[in-house]
Length: 471
Image 1 (cartoon, rainbow, N blue to C red):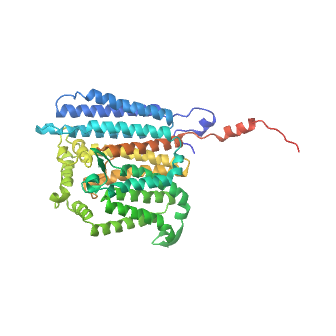
Image 2: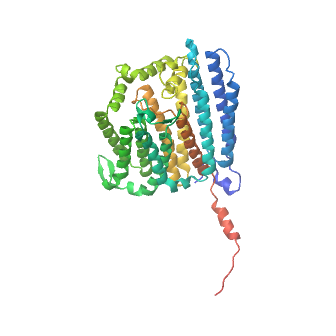
Image 3: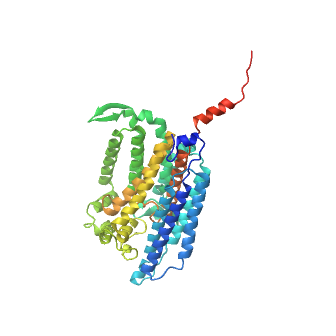
């Protein structure tokens, strides 16, 4: 199978295959231009002058993507040219909005006590170092399948550690997701997500035929055999344990959703989706009845205005901000996104919706859709089954996370506490997502790289020296 832009006739004729690295470089330049223009608009609107740090920020931000492009050009020359630019635009827009929230205190005559934009730029640098390291070390994505069970163990340990630590070290806003020591904090669940997706892909490739077997039809659905429900029940039990002990609805929903969708992709049986949704709905209902923190989240979601003093304030302010932004937004620097608590991380989408309006928020969603679509396209054209499932799982992880976050911000779903990929403030999320994109780049390079034409292989065999051996 050949990738997009690869003509089999041209390959057979020995013609070079376009790598599209020039397209990637041009799009990265456009992403840098958009980021710097938005930064200038924020500074001029809020303070009336350009920030003295603008030149340093612009040089640093530009250098990051130039280095990333050089690494891709050297180690993954056939990779999809849209993956890295999408991440660049989203990261740049996130940095601009965090900077805008840093200086928002000056609008009311106060001095900002903390600048998070420079810290986020440092995390972006660390993330791109991980991006480059993945491409340099992992030359063939199929190697990851050998370490599937080891990565599964690592992922489960990363999820379990915060739940086992004292609340003073691990708890933030009621959820036990963090490890905080000596002023440094990390959210290990972000890295666990990638480890578990790799394990899911390798496991489902091995067990796909067994899981695809059906025993009987019920209401038009071909249900699997009872003995094959074990993996789903284990994933369901793990997600419920995360919900109970880590008090984290978002990670629980994210991990179980990824597994069920990858199971559906592997077996092509819709009955797995029905079984998965039923199991999670039942587990969530039981958790609602037994645990107070789950009840608070659901009650806040059902009636944020009625629970404004008990946790609904964030959602109410978010809805007011989105309503104020309207269709076209108040303009960069002209809104009051700082009125929403934790706007830099959990509610950065509300800040974008207020200042850029519905059009701006939809544009951001379209960027995510392009990133996910290119990942799913890679899943379709890559030649090996492990790569297909891994690319599909990583792409769905981004899509599902964005859906859950935006659902919480707009009141469609209960608040989860997980961050918006690339946009929101948070080093763990940013670094982990750059690692995720690096894996997609590696798989897309394998998918688009032209295969050795059969004619050339036959010619080599024909030209090989032969020797007749007589008895």
